[in-house]
Image 1 (cartoon, one colour):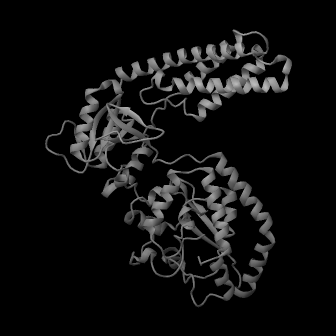
Image 2 (image 1 turned 90 degrees about the vertical axis):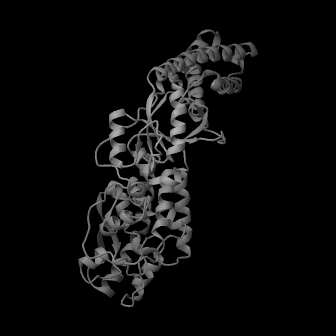
Length: 478
């Protein structure tokens, strides 16, 4: 579970980091020295789902009021509305395309209304055969609700398209200067797409630039504030500028990957803007809120109750064999760079506080007792971190926390390391279940940790916990 291992440095890199202790988070770094100055930035304005939901509510009421019998019952209308809203939410019909059009979503809207009516008709026939819906009532209800919903959605989309045409949102284009300028010019020729490029983010200008080329974090920051930038068009593989794009996402920008040559993107989420195929990028990471915290409290509380006697036995054995001080406390860096005190069973006694803060690891040292080596090898010394999870300092699953000294050094050396702190640190994580523990590549850990954050889901957390539990049965050392 831990990211620490043997005395050599991580990933085989030299350990000559110097002797000073660093206890602060470095500046947010992006691509190739690209940095955003500190400061609060406004989040992107999201399209409200309320108008479309209101349209569905009116359509359900209209369909119920035009029919006689059970179709007008309040419970029937409420079930009709909840069913349609649930299906539309699952199909992302309350998150319209950048340029919403009624004809594009017409089949999906009508199909979900028909499915809901058929399901309710079947339920009525099963629960109240005397009041079952006739075929005429079923067809009429579907038709009235579909027409009302489509008319309302058409009005909402028309108003939004009109607003986008008259007030297009400012955007930046990221990629090679020549390609980015070509894409930006195409968007400027089609203001009806709702996007107005104001600058190009690239390494160097070409000399024939239509828009200014921004090469430093200060220039991008100025463009974000002065132009109210809310969108970023990426015309190169996102992996080339991953840290920079994360910084732009954290600055409140919506990211879109644009294919500058041909419409090759397929599948859900594909859109067309100014004739280019594009799709949204979710680099900023999904928000893990109440559900993740509930899982942390439930699992950590249960494990603490079940392992309480075992923890007492470990503490007693350590006290008898190694003397007082069985709990090891150390400052680690958590979410958003906030320090906290991590708890472990003490399996080693450093020479002084400086060694504890700056020495990479101590696992396997000869002066360890046999019991301490057993705790380290099986990761049972980490069980006390369940208290950190219960208190809210950590999560069960997330990037492993590290000491301030190494956080500062790794953030300067490895792109994307500081971005790991977008989410609560954890006892185990995606990097650990892929064998990235001990003296392994920090760069690889950054990649796995950021991939975990970018694609977070509750099911992924459960899978990682199950894989961690399986790994404990065949420990390989900590």
